[in-house]
Length: 260
Image 1 (cartoon, rainbow, N blue to C red):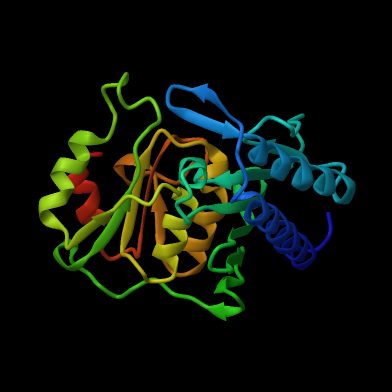
Image 2 (spheres, helix red, strand yellow):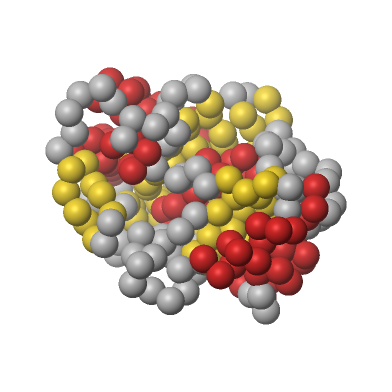
């Protein structure tokens, strides 16, 4: 493998290229199809993923690529890229300007590189393992608030929320009265980056896929935060539930969620 710096540099270039593609297409009619219950995919998702996967294959032919729209290939290689070519597809389709491109490189169970690019504001969040977290080249840190009552938190809901009993509605009802505010942005990748940048104190969600959180989770950790599964267990990128925070409100949030 190239150095982490080389992988990071390429990931940033690719995320920005894909982001520019998303912006160019944003005002054009978008052909939508249903990928699942209430889950959309557009031709732009696929075009963004094709661009990213093609370059990653050329640069890292011995790496696996696990990508949302299925253009990658997983063969059991030690190094694996997680690619979300458009996190926030519903936002994008409706013209709501909050979406991102997310790329992460892992080795086994260890995150190495994470990049999340939000093209509307031109905000590029990134981190390397042991190297800290950054926004457009400036270091970022989680917030210092230590009480949920003073915290701004975020969450999301599964696409199949109408059909599944564990749809996060009960958790939402428990958390709402005990926090300063809750946001539901529609992009888990950006929610995690906002925790890392101190813009909010925590994020929890269920019904996730690895490409939703593989980059943002590393960025939170490198910004001094904490990422876990339910019951505070070690973070597993393939777990469909995640709790990320500044670390100070983590245990309190887990208790309110009832995820013990």
